[in-house]
Length: 114
Image (cartoon, rainbow, N blue to C red):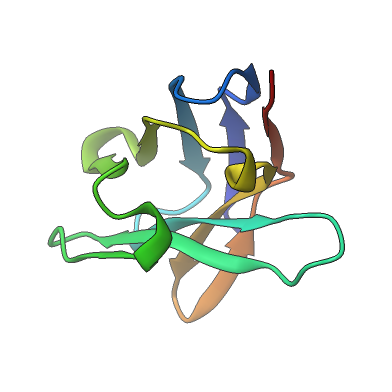
């Protein structure tokens, strides 16, 4: 089983930046890692994913503002979030796919507000 530990959430003003990190342990065969988010009253949605071969996918609303990256040696995935908007406010969850299993982190709150 993969353990995921997220960090980097917080409160930021509109237009600001945050960097999320997620460190994975417990497996040496993680295929894809990514970030999802869930706002109050809404379903969890994909934000960005990256595979071991750096194939990347973003949801349209974050393209040009968010950048996902991965350090395979450290089994860590990052999400650099720039030009944050109030609608980016959500709990952000790290996700890792290993041996056909989907693993989730505990979530980190991101709040974009004046």
